[in-house]
Amino acid sequence: MLKKVLSVIGAYKMYEKWLWQQVKSGVKPEHIAIILDGNRRWASENELNPWLGHKQGAETVEHLLDWCLKLNVKFITLYAFSTENFKRSPQEIEEIMRISEEKFRKLLNDERIHRNKVHVKVIGRINLLPESLQQLIGDMEKATANYDNQFLNFAFAYGGRAEIVDAAKIIAEQVKDGKLELDDINEIMFEKYLYTSHMTKQEPDLIIRTSGEERLSGFLLWQSAYSELVFLDVFWPDFRFIDLLRAIRTYQLRMRRYGS
Image 1 (cartoon, one colour):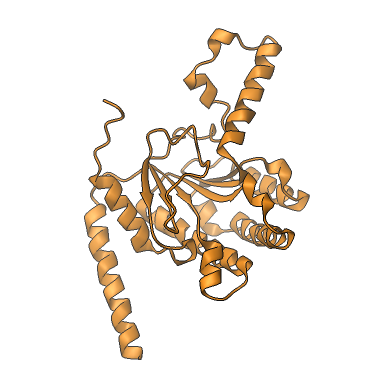
Image 2: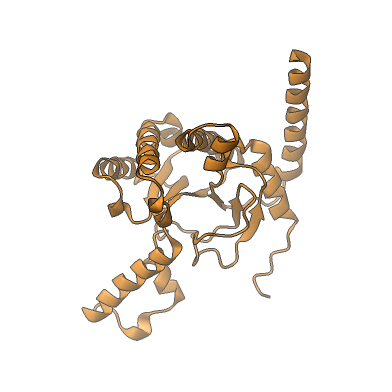
């Protein structure tokens, strides 16, 4: 049995090395966004409570940071919890918030974040979250506010339509107050009011969704207009470095014309 396990591990390492050789010299996506899907189904397949799937998924996020640092990905945006997810059972939501608070607190003190100057931000309707989590998010964002080497964004209590509505409301208020003219409103100006406006590159080059589902589910609706989409048939807790490399290889093989 042990011999078989070691053989599988050896094969995995060889495949990972082969993929790395394929992608390392190619053009890498500057901004990768991932829809972290499949936590509950992973838990169900393993006969576990749903929140244990979320806990394992949060562990995978920690590994992802190392992989993206190795690949020198400058911008990372992760879809962790949508506004629609508030419809889930109170117990599951409570566990998700508890896990999130635990992981954000750990991230606040993570030496990788400070050593690599990673700017961490949570995008979404933060006011819908528990006050203790809001405070922690504020502390985390304040501690990394001056970092600009890399950007790590968590879309939490997030909805793509909500983001556009919130931007439109701010713009409408400014027009009403005479701070903006109607003719000032264009695509470039509108982007200044999106949740992602703190980044120089708001549009993801590559969007990955795990679990086999093939839809965006409201993720970065404005920013994803020209993003390359890759859908992987693996639950998020089982996501590995080779899955990330496979997605980047697919991205590198595509011709990006931007409508030209």
